[in-house]
Each structure stands twice: as C-alpha cells, then as structure tokens.
Amino acid sequence: AKVKGCSFEGCTNNVQKGGVCFRHRAKVKVKVKGCSYKGCTNKAQKGGVCIRHGAKVKGCSFEGCTNNVQKGGVCFRHRAKVKVKVKGCSYKGCTNKAQKGGVCIRHGAKRKGCSYEGCANNAQKGGVCMRHGAKPKVKGCSYEGCTNRALKGGVCMRHGAKRRECSHEGCTNYAQKGGVCFSHGAKRKECSYEGCNSGAIRGGVCFRHGAKRKECRERGDHAVKVVNERVANVV
Image (cartoon, rainbow, N blue to C red; front, side):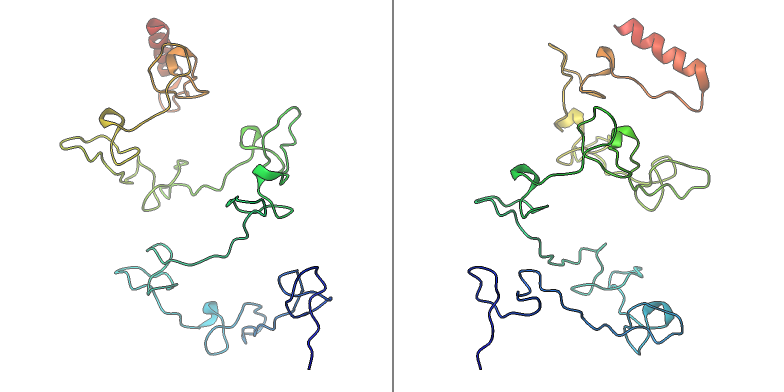
C-alpha cells in the first residue's frame, strides 16, 4: 500500500498530520499517563504515581548525593552527559544555534530590544536589559540576613564558600583563568586609557581613570570619604 508523502517541497518522509511530516511541524498528541493520586496532574512514574506521591527513582551513585540519577549512574551535578538535539543555523557553513526563522542572531534572527528609550541592548526580563532593571536569576546566600550571591555549598565567600587557589607553588591568591592568579599569568582586560597597564574595573577603565567604586555599606560615609581621598591623591 502506498503511503502519502509529506507535502513539503522536496521531502520524502511519510505524512503525519496536516499533510506534513514530523520534521515539518506535524502536531501529534502524545498520551501520557497521569499520577493516580487524587487531584494530581503530574506524570506517573513507577506504580502509577509521580515521584511526589511515592514513585521510587534510582539515586545518584556519587557518595552522599540524594539527586535523581540521569545517565551513567550519576546526576547532572556529577557530570551526567545528556545529548540534547539543537537545531543549527541554516546559513551555509554556520554552526551556531538557530533562533527565529531557522537562522542564528548573526545571520538575521531578530531579538527583542530593550524597551528603555534610546537603548539598543537586547531585552532580558520584563522587556528591559540588565542595565535598565532586568534582574537575573541568582541564588542568594543561605546565611540568615545575607543578600550576597551564593557560590559553593549555598553560601557566599564571606560565609564559607571555598574558592580555587592559584596553582603556582606557595601562592594563596584566588585562581582566575587557566588555574592561576593575575600575578602568575592569568590574563585580564586592561584599562582603555592610553598608556595605562592597570586592569579594567568598570566601563573599560581602572579606578584611576574613572571607574566608580561601590560604596561601603558597613562602615558608612566615613569609609567612602577615605576611599575617595585616596583615589584623588593617586590621580
């Protein structure tokens, strides 16, 4: 028996729904068994219930880890490798990820711009860019009353998060790029001011050439005044 082919030009796949194949956006409803627990709409796992209502899932084999196993007996945190199919840009020779219209941003995919007047940055959240108020999803430190960003172990540097040290023998500085600190070869962006070799802090310049410092929250106006005086003396 002959099977009707996809109506998309040049495609030899079998037709599914709407005259096209899966590749050309045929929409097919897939039946998924729901959890048998009353009022629950989650997907059923083992025993007809979801994980929340008793389905047992194999745990990660890493010692002390309680996450669910993904691939190779470990969870994502402990390097489970999962292949994700990503559609590539249709532009010849381009390996970037396709966005809208089958192409990447470099080859014409349009992104929503920031709604702030005169701003050409890409919108992140709430229709604005990071500069104009979009708040990134950042996990905060679990220490009570602390608003710093969490690093390792759910806490910030101030409350115990450990950072990797420079691999140079006898050095206790924090490692940057390549496992070493700035003193031992880690490259950093230099100040854009002509003839200056200092590291850029903010806005492409160093403190000496206009980078603004964050005000001290703990020691108040006196600390800010002292810092500003020191900067003025250097300049």
